[in-house]
Image 1: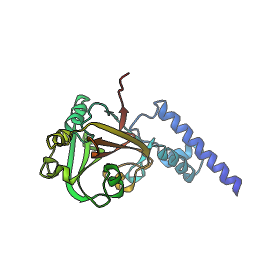
Image 2 (image 1 turned 120 degrees about the vertical axis):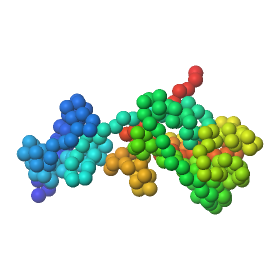
Image 3 (image 1 turned 135 degrees about the vertical axis):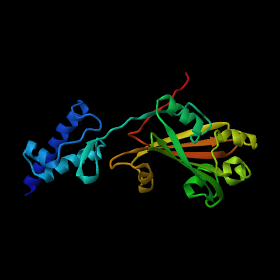
Image 4 (image 1 turned 180 degrees about the vertical axis):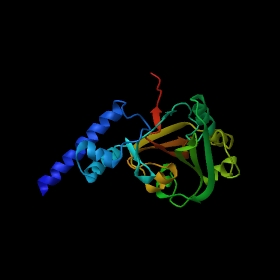
Length: 248
């Protein structure tokens, strides 16, 4: 029985290897529909269960996505180039981001929600606050060509942005400029990037297929002595190419 299971796993791997080679070689281009399980089972001389196991390997790798009705398709992706050095005004600057998207011939948009809340332990650590201290949160869901591309949250100590546009339900082109006008100029920024699998709370609004990793980019803007904002951007790995340009 154990040998039979081992043979089946090896067959599933060989199916995955063959289809992967077809995808990388262009025989199955982005967006192409895979043959049905019945067709693949007949082609490889195996059971439907073994075919499904092989396809599951490709789903985990992010090469294949499942659709309603049981159809499987090669992931079709048109990634954007996200230049993280193009602006030091904070990752939630819509103007700079939207301009770059339009220059690539794509259509940007975003929704915005502004709330006041107690800082979580994580946000409090970033902003050098005590957990529960009041912060203003600006949450953005960015789309490109109508498809979710980024989930962006920006937090400010409430005392810094009270009575400024950043505490209001409206777009703000350059948050750091508003902070400077309020007497809190930005002196430097710190970036941290993790690559990981998304949480359910991130996967749902971004419509992430199984097996899609995300870049978790945290940018903290510092004033003279303390942080004045923190931005967390969740960017699906199949939709972004991250770029830094550093001077020498």
